Image 1 (tube, rainbow, N blue to C red):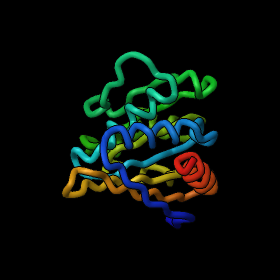
Image 2: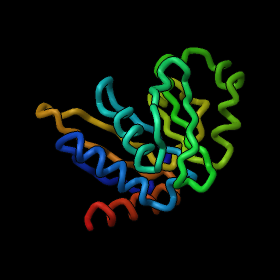
Image 3: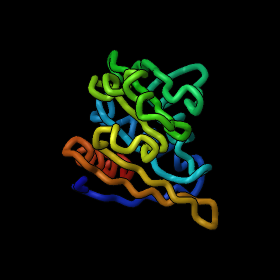
Image 4: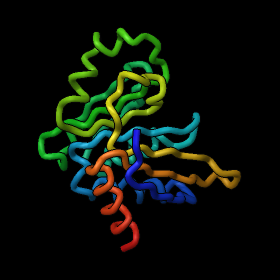
Length: 165
């Protein structure tokens, strides 16, 4: 899988993660994008998703899909397109992929956010964007953003402009 562009970001604290999510929400490509989130337990993947969904207008409880594998939302700012939050941490059987209809969800328009994508390797289509979160000794986060498609590359450029403003 080729990488078209890479950017590095640093989140010194939780508010920085929230600002990053708000910037992501401000990018027009977000409505129809697949984002993979990599990082160890406690790296901030679910926190980023929660901040992003809030920034997109989701109200009410935002649950971690650890046991359900996927949680679905209809964020007001996505103009009727859904947002699907996947957590493949407990994913063990490739047959689950077909049985659950994940192929159809990934083929349809909308935002797809996938935690622990390596657990579904070989079944997931290539992401538009991969974010790798790495916890630093001072508890800050180094974030590597890789664009794997032209849409992901356009989002990265827009994101960089928004965060620099």
